Length: 87
Image 1 (spheres, rainbow, N blue to C red):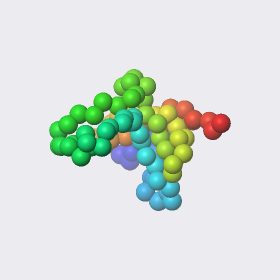
Image 2: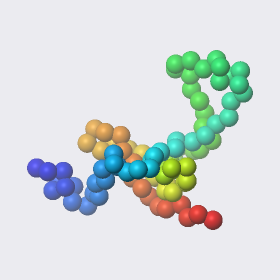
Image 3: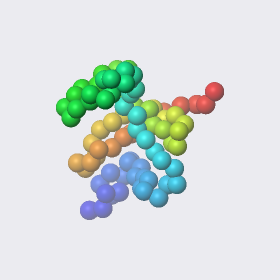
Image 4: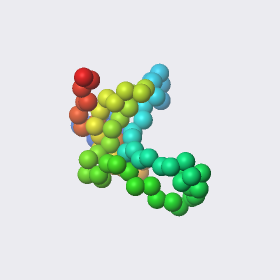
């Protein structure tokens, strides 16, 4: 059965042909240069954003949406929750 028939309320978007970079930002942190130079696989970076606050989605370099991370058909996915209005 096609995906759209199995999930009629889900809006599927193929973003592979969008001429903008779309980025889901988990959070931010600051590191001294010495710490940056010493980073190794397995290191944990504590971000400035609580886990229940969700993600920020950038289109190009502009913050455009708040989103929730999850899985969809065994793939990483995001749900756009609300727009971020420019000031």
